[in-house]
View 1 (cartoon, helix red, strand yellow):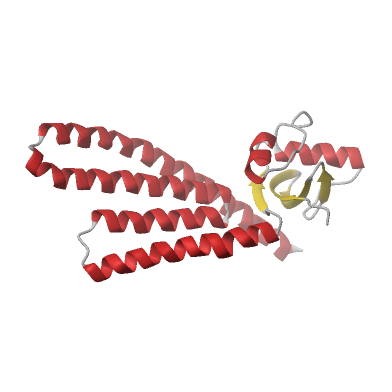
View 2 (cartoon, one colour; view 1 turned 60 degrees about the vertical axis):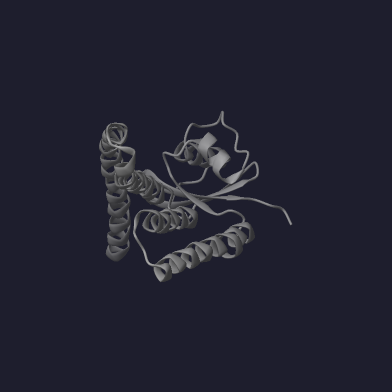
Amino acid sequence: MKMTRLKHLIINVSLYLENILAIIITIAIIIGMTDMIKYIVMIFQTNAIETYDIFQKFLGHTLLLVVGVEMVAMLVKHTPGSVIEVLLYAVARKMLISNAHMLEFLLGIISIASIFAIKKYLYVSNIKDSEAINFFPATASIPDINKTIGVKIPENLADTAGGLVSYLSKQSCRDIHEGSYYRIADAEIKVMSYSDGIIHRVWVMKYNES
């Protein structure tokens, strides 16, 4: 029992730390965007011949911010697709701003092609086969869940995933616990993290009758 509580505590702490890191990265991105304006001013003030180096640094800085944005999405969404996006933008940034030799450039192209192949033939097909499994924090809004995985959960029952689980639990006269399972409209919902009377994370899957 103590080990189970310890595991739950570690999971919850990890989730909170990920959210904190996402907030810190977001703040850093916002601050970093002010430097983009400085680069633009420098491009206007520099001779055309000398503009290339500054523009290259501008692209590098911009793509780095894009990688940061994708990292925030990865920490929040916890989906394979967000990891793929981070890798894709990171490789693209390396190729565009570095003075790579032909071999390094070729390896970069192969890396991007491999990422696209994984996204098309492994990630996408697996998501379809597993009926679009997704994990959401309990604070995720019902409209966002519907839009993300293409389900039609009624939006007038609750504002968030956690509120919806509480509503369904009362309707079915069942207690909430980790592993609690519910069906509504064309969606299946399972409680993945629950402690001290608080729902932390849920799993939502589009239900297909077959």
